[in-house]
Image (tube, rainbow, N blue to C red; front, side, top):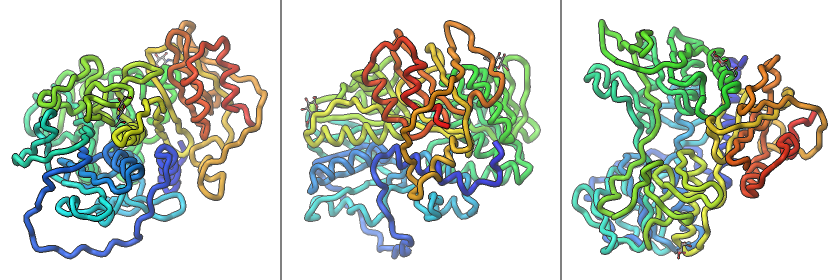
Length: 530
Ligand SMILES: *[C@@H]1O[C@H](CO)[C@@H](O)[C@H](O)[C@H]1NC(C)=O
Ligand SMILES: CC(=O)N[C@H]1CO[C@H](CO)[C@@H](O)[C@@H]1O
């Protein structure tokens, strides 16, 4: 895309989508936080009991805390996290934070919103939380966070957990939102210390900080992995390479970027976009061996190709953290990983699981496990509701989004897996069909819903059973809708440069009907507007 000069806008549209995904206004924060006075170190007294105990300090846990407090205003909620940080959102770590012009962003962890105001990746400032020792005393309850503490054992009958320092905390209701840890490649794990210390597994704030530093101190970074995280980081680093002599390489086994999600023609097209961002993309790359030689990391591929680089980012998926399964007597799903829970996200009578670690029963689409921000929000919220007695099954499909710059962005819902048959309906994009334009359209920065009908014919691309027509012009993929089918029923939808139509997609999946002509269904999305 042509957007090297448009970095300022990047935070704008990505942020708006986050707010859109979140579905709730993000709480305003004070513009400046007074430097905290360093208190005399007092030993932290742990509450011995928490009515609501949330294990894990990520998005799902925070969303649950918020919905518990909304439904039970006096609730006392204790979050236990092994990270040193208060709950924060992860998407900016591979998106907005990279596009800040301010070099102090690694310390402030603040990024610019569309209106020029900044916000922090932290959901709430420290003043929002009550201290763990006060949780039992404060009049109207609140949310407390125990940071840097790990739950190592659950006694389900006794309704209590044990921390690694042997402290015990009992609960009435417990949420497990332990997320996961990034996977690594065995060939890297086996390659020895010199390689390991030049490898980043990207997930946390510290990983962002470390990779930021690496991108300033080294000449060549190789990202292994062609999914969302790998592709977003490749674009972010590629953009940074425009004003430096940093070389950015991305390699993965698929034929194109996001090859496990996008049908091949669109994956190919996306790869061309990523390349135009300054990334050397190596496709069909299976890593055979990694070693450290003459000051360089050497990656040997199965087909004999050799890549020399300074640093590796392995973005090869997530391993859900299920260490508590054994002591808690919980079942781990053998296909998807994660704790098996029902449609209400309940694992046992007073234990729920949400976020990346939950393998839940989706009443429309069957058993699933989802690793996206919006799912963490939606499932955390639902678990919180159920924990306070709401009894709602999980039917609200979460969505996710990814942007490849100011000109191309997409939102997806349901099962989007390129091994399923797909039907894509495309129209020519106009200048207003970009993530950037969609957020600029209304003065408030909220994308407006335009509901006018269009009539133009559009190319239709089906990935199976017939080979897709070769696009004659790139314009053919300007904007469109891609339907993913299972037994002739739409189970997933990608909205490609089509914004503000997620409710329509959600309804189609919820209805679960067979459609004779998806070209007709595509009309519901008004993709032919002007
Ligand atoms: C995608 O790209 C690969 C490799 O460049 C090529 O072999 C393949 O035919 C392309 N597929 C489509 C559908 O364009
Ligand atoms: C506390 C509460 O409402 N729990 C409910 C969550 O959902 C399950 C399944 O519908 C109910 O059995 C629980 O009572």
